[in-house]
Image 1: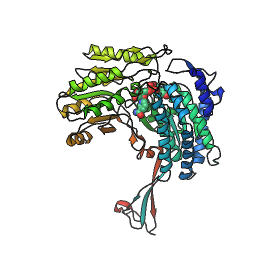
Image 2: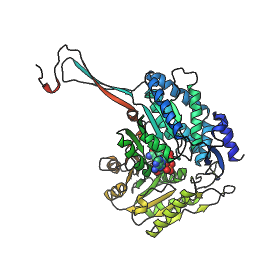
Image 3: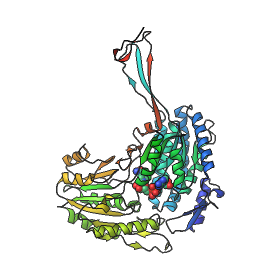
Image 4: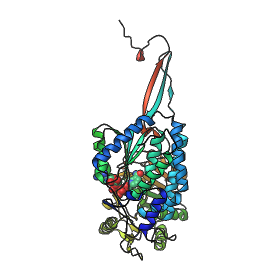
Length: 503
Ligand code: NAD
């Protein structure tokens, strides 16, 4: 079946009306073969304004619904995702080009955050704090923050939105979502499923989820709007630099999940077979288009020749092809611009003394208008400028080190600080890497690659990655406001710090 009709039938199964993806001004192309799979309307400014107003009204009602009932809505949505895992997973594959396994994995991640958020809806705990004043009790309460604006990237078109939306909903917030202009169809599918989840639940007001489709100007509108209490944006560092000052200018809160430049240190004691498998998934998986993709390999000089030879042998065997084909491990890049950026990065690496292995264009039969590349492995003499930048493509730069201190310094000497890992069987090396003087990233792993995070932990990174945390642990606090409350039951009025004040 050609992709346009497959897309159309999946969208119908997921409950999206045809007029929503047919005839609009935004052309949606599948990276699999470059073909047109939909035409979505760009939300007009006045309609965006009305969507934010509806979301704000929804928040005013939703904030008073008991949190466990809010969790019930998320549970219903999670069940619909279970029912439609294959449909939505296939749509993710068609719209992003990630292989079927990863498309399904993305939907599973949404299901996981639904489960997490549902449990969380009974655990939005505040502390009770000992007061210095007799007959007083201090406590903190967590209240819904307001409307959460979510701006998302193409590479995880639905999971990252779900990390935000599920927490926002159980926390009593409403959501206005601006998906990537390259992946609006999966967003429309999520909205349709969510509308189904709301049916039959009388407490769920209209406007809990508003989707605005379009380009960067829509993201800027959300950043500027006073009614958006929390602005959560996922994408490139340049997007964060453009939008964070706008949110800061109105003194609102932002959660930023920006680019990464993730590394792995491979120590002399590492299990090389395990490291090889982990490096393959982390560097080549999702065609190098994960924020946590492994981009830099820092290998001890005593094992570098052996490991790099093993990796070249593996790189030679990586099956590149249509992501709908079960034997493919690497699908296409999102568009020709991404291919051109990969080519330019490889040329720059070569000019800086890099030895490039792989990286060639691949012509896939029937997909001649798409952009397929073999993953590249580049041995670099030093961590030059191109290595310090994130190129969103499957390029792994390898460098050698002599001492662990040198490796950690190299590791941290990039602007980004998202995910990191070390391969070692030496406990002292592992602990050093995880310590305050080790990796400076938000995610630090031992004997697994930097990509493939689970829902239970907080996800995010430091420095140019933006400092935001989403998903697990106490990331929910970013979607609520804290009130410190002091109750005086003493009948007298002792003042804090022993201050005497009275007539
Ligand atoms: P992108 O920055 O091009 O776009 C992301 C979103 O931001 C889109 O919705 C886009 O419309 C909007 N946008 C982009 N530039 C903007 C601007 N100047 N003003 C207003 N809005 C703007 O990113 P992408 O190509 O879709 O995704 C890849 C990037 O996202 C990579 O850098 C990757 O590392 C990052 N990413 C980060 C995480 C994370 O959790 N840290 C997760 C996924 C992707």
